[in-house]
Image (cartoon, rainbow over all chains, first blue to last red; front, side, top):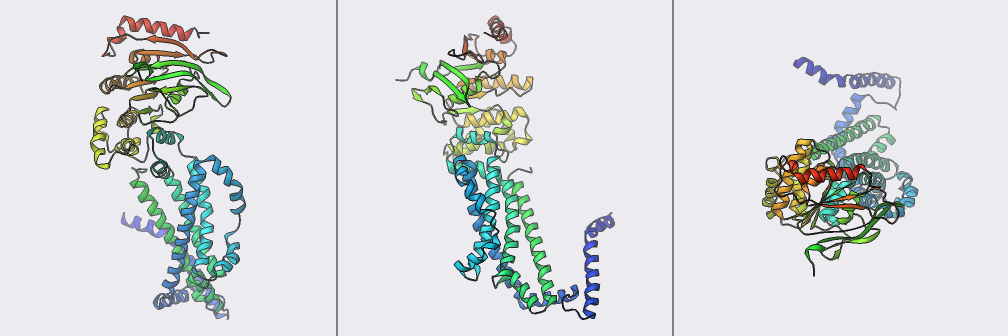
Length: 256
Length: 260
């Protein structure tokens, strides 16, 4: 019984272990043949330990996560608020539709030059771009979630005489909570991708920049360590969101 | 100024939606404390009439006056029991929480809510189920929860749109009797839409029959019948009462002939 459970637990790790092993073998062979481009995972692990011990790992991770979170917060608050308005009022939706359709497809990374001119290097530029990138998916998803609310519930709120504020917090937000969480998970993923991209392309801070520096100083082990770490961070953030979603859903009685 | 007769007055109320006449000009009065049932074939505008009476839709012509004042917006003094109880309850709130919504809307302080919730849940027989979520309840219990929420509003007028239409026969009968008792105890005025003629006679002081597509210039209101069967009524003796049988025959004949 316990043996079977152990096997079930181990099974997902088989493929990654094989992959790392094969990579280790291949990278060592390439190094033996005089390549500077690849480092074996064992060397990446040593570089990772070094970065963890000298603190640069935590500093850069903190910067990227903090900026992504703040940018997401900004984009999400604005996106949710506008999504609520556009979802509840058909007139507002018509008023905004053209502007949204024109602005939304602008790739967020294309905003780097503008943001750099406006804000210079640093936190504010990255914040602005992350907020821009996360604003649109939240706006669009919240708007469509609001439009799909059971119309009967809105009638109930009218008959009971709920104020606009009460209606938003007691009917609309709980009714869209499940979809809002899906949108937020998407937002988290977008925020992380955009933050790292901005750091690679322009902002001399954070994990993306650290990885770039490792690459430019011909340190493939450290570069690989950052790459793996960014993957781990992304995985952890998403797992945390899934957990949070489950807890909130249970508290709201969606999964009694 | 206000008399018993103009407690609720329909004055030539007509409703057009999407270019179609749903309700042709209809006039009648409802007195305070009266239980009025509205029957008629599908598409005759029963539900629309009720929605106009509660301010959920605006009349295209004529007006609904409550105590002499034109109804244009929903009021907390008018409760509405929807037919689809499953959709009208907030799935993320317990029974207690759903009832509480009415009190929160009315600005009742948090400390005063619990006793009032317990009171109305006791009235509808849901005291033991206060902590359950709607999905955990049967259809009859969900409808009881919705009625409890409406009672918590302390309305003087209750609109009920085929509230028992989707329930099984036994549940329906017990809910009919409970409703009759509640209405008598609280002195409520009720407008009750149903497609069940027997239910209308059993519950109502008066039955109003509407007709579908009355033709240009003719009112939707086709028939008005006073039900003088004594109260309290009960499922056995009332349904054997000669007047019940006679009204039943009369209404069935009227609906059958299609009342040109």
